[in-house]
Structure formats: C-alpha cells, structure tokens
Length: 486
Image 1 (cartoon, one colour):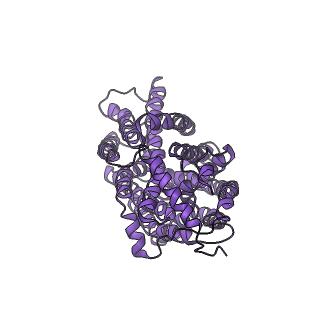
Image 2 (cartoon, one colour):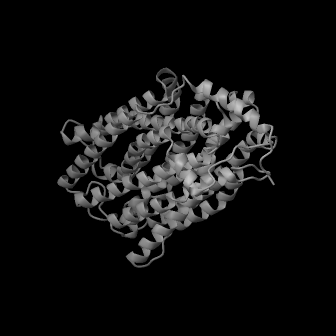
Image 3 (spheres, rainbow, N blue to C red):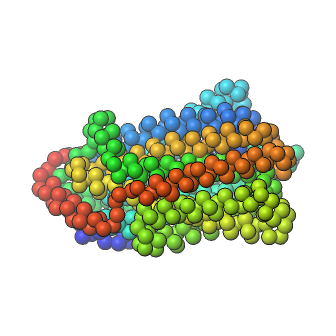
C-alpha cells in the first residue's frame, strides 16, 4: 500500500465498519463489567468473592493467550491477509460461548465456580481472536496522527453504544418481573434471552466489520513483494513489549482499566442501594449514558489537536475522577438531594455523564497512542509487531480489569451486603461503607492515572519525520521478496 494512500483520510464506510465490529466487544465488556458478578452472585447464588475470583482467574489466564494471538496474526500469510482470517474465524465461537456463559448448570457451588471460570475464559479467548488482530489493523489502516484518533472514536462509539443499548434492552425487555419474581434483576430466564440476542449481534458485527475493512487492507497486502520480520520467538515478544514508550502507556492505562472494572462491577449495587433505582430508572440510566458516548465522540479529537494526546488524556482522566465521585461524596456528606427529590436524577445524570464521557475520551486516546507506539518501535527495530503490541495492551487491560472486578467483589463482601437484597433494602451503614470505599479507591486510581499519562514521550511533533523514515524503509523492503503469502 502506497504511503500517499495510507496517509489520506479514510473513506467513511471503512471508519464505520471498523468501528461496527466493536459491537461484539461492547456487548461482552458490558456483560462482564455490569451484570456477570450480579447474576452469578444474586441469581445463581455464588458468594461475591467466588464470582469475582472466578472472573479474575479467567481474565488472567486468557490474558496470556493474547500475546500468542498477536504474534500469530503478525506471522499469518494467506491470500486473505494477516489479520482477516482471524476476524472471520472468531465470529461463531464467540457467539456460542456467550450463550453458554449465561446458562450455567444447576450444580454445586464448586462446579458452578469451575464452569464460570472455564466458560468465561473461552469467551475472552474467542473475543481476543477478533479484538487483537482488529486493533492491530489500526496502524495499518492509516498513518495519519489524528486520523487514528478519529478511527478509535468510531470504535468506542459502537463499542460503548452497543453495550449501553443491550443494557437498556436488558432492563426494559429481558430482566423484568415475571410471575413470583418481583425484581427483574433476579429473573434468571431474562438473562438467557439477553445472552441469545447478544450472541447474534456479536456474530453479525464481526463478520460485517471484517468484510468492510478487508479491501482496504488486502489491495496493499497482495501487491507487497517483501515484508519486515516480526517477533518470531517468545523472547523477542518480551523484548518488543519492553519498548519504553509502550511500557509507559501501559503504566498509564492500568489505572484507567482498574477504575473501569471497579466502577462497572459496582454500578448495579450502587444504583440499587445508594440511589434506590426502580426497574424503569435502570433502563433510563443506561439510555442516559448514550450522551456520555456522544460527548466523548465530540470532544476527543479537538482536545487531542489542541493539547496533544498525552496531555489531553491526563486532564480527561482527572475530570473523569472528579465528576464520577462527586455525587457519591456529596451523598456521604449529606449534601446531595435525597432519593425521590425532583432534582436528584437531573443532577446525578449530569455529573455521571460528564465523568464517564471524559473517561471514554481518555481511553480513546490511549488506544490511539498505541498505534503511534508501533510506528516508533518499527523505526527503531525494523520489525512489524502491531499484533504483539495490541496483544500487550489487551493483556494489561484484562489483568487490570480483573483486579478491578475483584476489588468490587471484596467491597461488596466487606460491606456486609446480603445476597438477594432488594433495591433499597440494604442497611444505612452498609450503604455508607459502599460509598466510602468506592470513593477512596477511585480517588487513588484517578490521581495516579492522570499523573502517569504525562510521562508518555511520543508527540505529534516528531510523527511526520518518523512516518517519512518508515516510508523510505518500506520502499527498500519492497525491492526484496522475503515471504510467501501462500
């Protein structure tokens, strides 16, 4: 693919379909972060610590698969390209595993713990076989510094949008009171319906995205006569991921993903017992968060152009922390409107929408910076390792998100919240402990995260020079055939 073409702005259909594929990740991530702990704890009946431990084990074990997927996709040589065989092959397995996750057997707690751990890991692996190669496409689709942020805007728009849409559908149509079940969140049959609809959407999204981005990549891939080597051994993979800008980016991202895992896992508990949401208000809350997604979509590119990616991510992380904890801190201090007050929901939604919108924007920039890291590494090492870097990012994300979920389970257990507790049924002292621990941990994670982004060394200033040097090297590689695409 010529340098002039790859530097051009991408056609809208490519941006749209690239982002469309993240529907699968959005549905999975929302399910894991928001409902899975609650479902297995409150509906299936596993203790919160067992559920959070099972999810954390699954995330840790799965995370070690990601580098292998990244390396194999870097090394794949077919007439369909490097990444796309992985994209097409992942669609059906992820749908099947997703259905199984939400339909556990009626068995002992030990067997249900083993089942949850194993199926959760298989869900994550199947998603990795799509997400790792798909994220590795980012630096291959465009070399433009800001166009990468635009691409990630679409990816996060569809990812978050799909997660929120399936959550609205869950609260409105699936998790509803039936028969003797007064609380929709405790309706086991609703989770099965939720899983089936989600599985179908995931499968369609992956296939559409793979097909929509294929031509943009394959035209250039089939005209290449040479290709730089990658990380061929485990030791080389480790050396690649020790690249200093990448390590600094991971350091910043780990605080953001830990915070996200904690916030999402505690959300059903906080909405139920701090704000005493009704069934309709759960759906209303999920719908309101669409505004946070669109806020991020609108502000992230202008802020990136004005401040640079790293500075913008730092400030957005700080604002996400401040606005995210404000309603809880004010409630703890007795300064927030009481439940049922006409001003409660408008004020609560406004603060949370701004906070979550800022958090999403920071994550968009994190993924955009990852593509810049691959360019810097390729210039230094002469190797193309987009898959290894994207795998390393997902490795960190899964491990740290797992820790966030585990912290949520520990908070629930420490607070003394009883299994099967109805919304508003928790004792005041239990609610106070939930708030205090949540606010304290988020302050720590947010403060360190905002500081860590300031240490990221790559900026726009040297980007054009780096891309120009890579273009010279690519032209030299094209002159010497080095592989067989089979």
